Structure formats: structure tokens, C-alpha cells
Image (tube, rainbow, N blue to C red; front, side, top):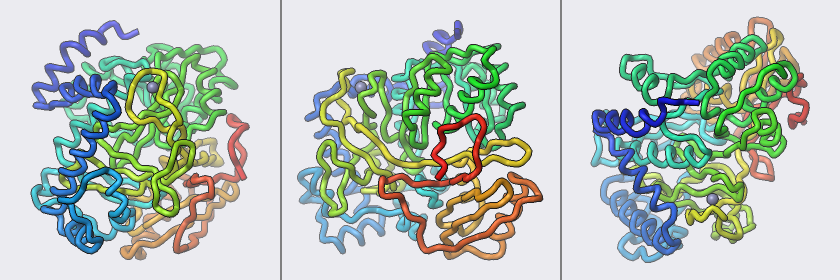
Length: 461
Ligand SMILES: [Zn+2]
């Protein structure tokens, strides 16, 4: 499929990493070993990492010093990961309110990577990451992506909204040599023409990996099944990410491409959290970079089989210590270890983001995830957002206002509506204090009450 891939993987990637002075391949090789460590070793390593992070946060971040002092939390007496339960959760509201106040004084903001996102519950937040942390995340993502069967250096096709493709000379060379010049389908504008073009491109050069949001992969698969039964696209791997992958979506995608679907879970604030391996037993936690807790409503740790709120501590981000961060999703620990032999903690299930596709009058399908992400990040002062398509030309925007919400925000919203849905649509903004999560733990970002022709099994209410 990719006959140059071994050259790319074994020679070009290491040379490129050396030229970039990036240690990610070194971390990656280490992580190939640590995924099989004894659980006690993993626990001890995480304990040491958490302790070091707590000390660093106490010393260099005034927010954390105040919070630990107020909670009477003594870092020097930290003797078990369960002691973390004495520290209050870090919420999205904290992130929004504190902003750069959460940064460590040991770093200069100009040296940091900025990540802006609508988060996993439609709440817009900004996080910062140092370069060393970035390289650990890169290595962990590479390791888990390879669990799908794809290998570094092989080609990738993306189904994504606004993919960040570097267009400078370095970006172009990198894509050509390392990623085999991937193709993408824009999820902010999926229609019969763009899906046809994408299908033809994949037939001409089948990618090793097909990567995208669960509902976008499913929409494309459904389109191929109904309209393009003439084509056969057989990637080696399919990685679905960023939102809940329903069983019917997994089966539908897998059936059309004759390929297993690997479910990956993460969020922009801390990057990869967990990913499935090839067994389908569950999702392995990225324990090299994160410590993950599942807690019940009383704040206690959950046992296997008991659903709980997902709380993460980022072990690598020293620039902006993220300790006991409540992601906004629900998870459940698996009752037994994975049959693949990896010892990284195993999540049996995750309930998180759910979103419909919006259908426009001129036949465009717009990914609800990409749409909410764009609107929440671009419109100033939107604290939380949910988009509801009531009828083909009528929308409701449920908005929780942030303090910086003003006329510019409503003006920006009007322009975005026009850009994505056209001149003819009408809409209403409803301002709320909170957009609730469903009792199952699902957060519905984008709800469309309009039927879709390719996807008969959607969860329209
Ligand atoms: Zn496994």
C-alpha cells in the first residue's frame, strides 16, 4: 500500500526528529515497553509523577498554593494516590476564570503551545502546554494510533473540520515524507459532490488509516453504501475519535470498509486519554502522561463496573499544571485486564460527546462537533453552547454567556450562521445558566430534528 513507508518510518522520521531536536521517538520507544509493565510499577511511577507535579504546582503556581492551603492539603504528606481525593476538582469554570493565572512562573507564556477548544461539554476553554509535554503527548498518540494496525510513515486520510495542515515549506516536506501527503474531507461541508471526490481519491490511493469523528466516518460510510456501491476502499486501520462511537456506527463503518474501528478518547485540554487496542476489550489509559480517576457523586473512587465522572491529572504539563480536572464525561473501569497483555488501566466504557449532523437546504451535511467547536471558539464570550436545528431553516442556539459576551458576539454569531447555513435561515438565541448533561452522562452538543437520507439510525429525538 505504502511501499515507501518503511523508509519513512526507519530513516526519514528519526532524521526529521533529530533535526527538530524532538525526543518524541525516544519517548515512543520507551512507551512501547512501559505498556507491559507490572501494574505496581505503573502505580509507583504515577505516584512519583503526581507528587513531583504537586510540589511544582505548589511552588510555582499561586492558584495551586492557595487551593492547597485552603484545603489544608500538605504535599509533603502525600503518601498514596488516594490522597488526591482531599484536593477539590479543577473545573472548566476554574480554567475560564483563572486563565493565565494557572500558569507556572517557571515558564514564559511566549514559549508555550496554546490550545483553544470548546472542550468536551461545549464550554470554551484555553490551555497552555510546554514543549517537553507536547513531545510526550505526541509519542503517546503515536503509540496508541499504532494499536489500530497503522504504522508511522503510512498514509492517512482525514474526515475533519478545519484540519490544521501546515502550508509552509516545512509542513509540506513533512507531509510528503512522513505522512505520505494525506487527503481530507472537510466535515463543515460534506455533500454528495465532496464525498464523491473524496471516495474517488481514496480509490486512487487507498490510505493506510482513515481518521475522523465517529459520526463523520459513519456518514461517509453510509453514503458509500447507498450511493457508491461501485467503489471498494480497504484501509488497514480506522481511528474514530472525539465523541461517542455508537455500536451501530462501529458496525456500519466496519462493514463498509471491511476494517475494524479503533475508538480513541481524549480532549484538547490534556490530549489523548485512552484508546482501544485490537481486542475490543476496552480502552487503555494513557498512563504515561495522565493519572485518571473515576469518581461517584459523593466524590469516592468507583469500582469496576460502576459509572463515574472522569477526572484527569496531567503528569507532563509543567507549564500549566492540570490536577484533578473534571473532563465532563463518564467512564467505567473494566472488571478484568485486557487479553492483549498490555497492563495500562482499562476503561470498559465511555459516555461523552454526542452530536448530530446539521443538514442544510442545499444538501450540505455539517458535523455537529466541528460546528460547535467553531462557533464556541470563534464567538467571543460564549461560555457554553448547544446548537439545535428545529427545522431545515430554523435554529435555536442555547448559550451560556461568559462575562465578555457583548454585541460583537451576536454580530459574529449572525455572520457564522450566514456562512454555514445561508441567508434564508432564522434563528433564536436562548440564554441559560447551564446546559445540562443527560442522566446517562452524554452531552448533546448539536441536535438536529431534521431527518437525514444516509443515516437512518441516528438518534433524533
Ligand atoms: Zn488491550
